[in-house]
Length: 269
Image (cartoon, rainbow, N blue to C red; front, side, top):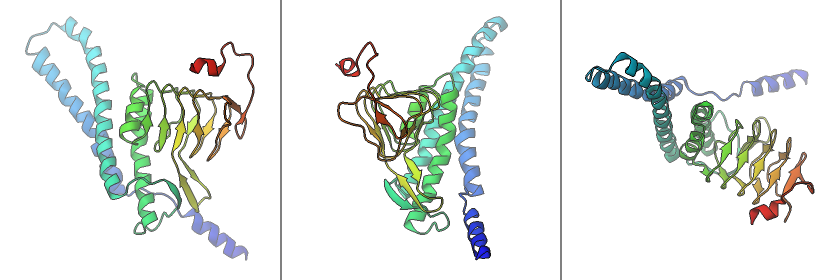
């Protein structure tokens, strides 16, 4: 009996998500290096087609060079997002993203759910670098561009991530959503280690504020002007209460906040 249990544990531990080496090389080489070569070409054109051609003085050259390199960094991020978005569009034609609860098949790519999981993990792998790089760059607003174009998320105007963990797919964020540092959004949840996986869109209503340490799961819906106080868990399928704006706890429960100078309902008007 003990031996059988040990064998089962060993078999389960061997079920891991692995990206084929060839795919890993292609994704990294094309997506991450091609934009670098494009920017290198622009830099050489700048140096030899402008600086040298017009004999720009060295002091003027050195004064404009930092700003030009800053501009090239921005161009690199834009091209990176576009290249990665092309990969994802190609994969989506083979296996479109789907919402629902599916078997987490990791070892049979010929089955419908195995194929879906294969491309789900590919999309999850390729989007992480552009999202991380844009969020850490001097142009953090580009993270929204990456999430829209690569993950096909719906993100409204003035949505701000303050070093939070972005939902990579199936997120619908309305205007003025504000996400404080360390809060995390996830549109997928693994129900058991090697059992089912849930992938459902989450919707954050207009003016929703997530304070630090919050967790938002699949199929969560917040309404307009909701304020989610720190260390709150909005679990899978969470819904608030009508005409209630403030939530805290695990799971998130409505609370009364009387000491704020402006009531949330008045703000919305």
